[in-house]
Length: 410
Image 1 (cartoon, rainbow, N blue to C red):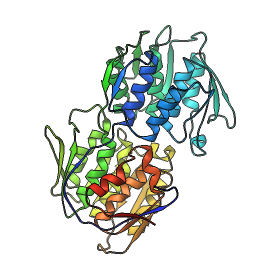
Image 2: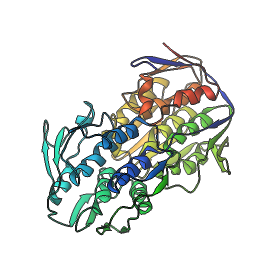
Image 3: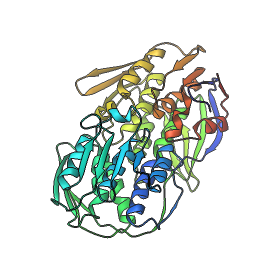
Image 4: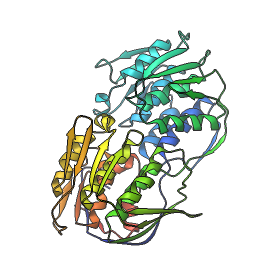
């Protein structure tokens, strides 16, 4: 698919029986790749994500170049910054947007441990030069728990490699707890013991062990198919190999969607999605699953469901300011996202479904493209810059065709 094109999707209100093979979780894959590197690179990893972020991680870990360009991959930037701090001197950089995404909290923690970090443009932001820890200065650090769980996960993964191990105190409110639990689960698979009690994570010095590890299908990718089922007149979708027992926090979408009109039945084949009744007013906290917010906002806006949303603060520092992006794009079909203090309210559209074409901007954000694509069940849709899905779900448009949608480039 060409860069900077527009993708036209014809309206299709029903989805016949379709089996979707989701991409692997890039969150799990990126953790496993770092841990495998710390274990000596001899693990056998299967079902590794085809997402661009993960391919970028693989490519950089396998290169001896002095400069690591992570492109627009935030997780890759944060994990590799910590990895460099215990391995080798590297300069880390990325896209213009990546150079606007803060890393000071993580960098300050690494400097406290003994790493040297030199900002090459703006203080607290990439690009930066990381010189590894020569001598561990302390084995106890404190870091805010409410900014990005990726900072915490990055520190956790290198902790066992430090001569004295590491005790991490999480201060204030702790957001995205499932991602911290995910990190602990993947570390355990590579032979590392860690404890998390209240606000304290303790990881003693240990040796990572090479292992065989299969990466789960991606629950974030699954959420968009919940959107298609919720907004269609009739649908039957099977998400192959998706399991109820997952280490991913975005499995929470199952419980949210039972209120928004989608029932999930787990079988040996995977998750079977089918339509059910929805309720008209809901309230969800996205602190532990912020990547679900765009999907849920679009579903509620289009189905006439008023939704109170909390826990969206981290959305401002993602691939784009996702709150502003949602406000702009929801307005195109008569819906609003109202903000008051730390609560956001989806006020749904009151206009009747029409066949009027709606064109959506994606803001260089893969989740904007995929969250708004299910609106093609109620109207023809144009998606600008459609190749953004390569970041996490490169086969997304092909899977839509598999489900019977007609897509064409403009």
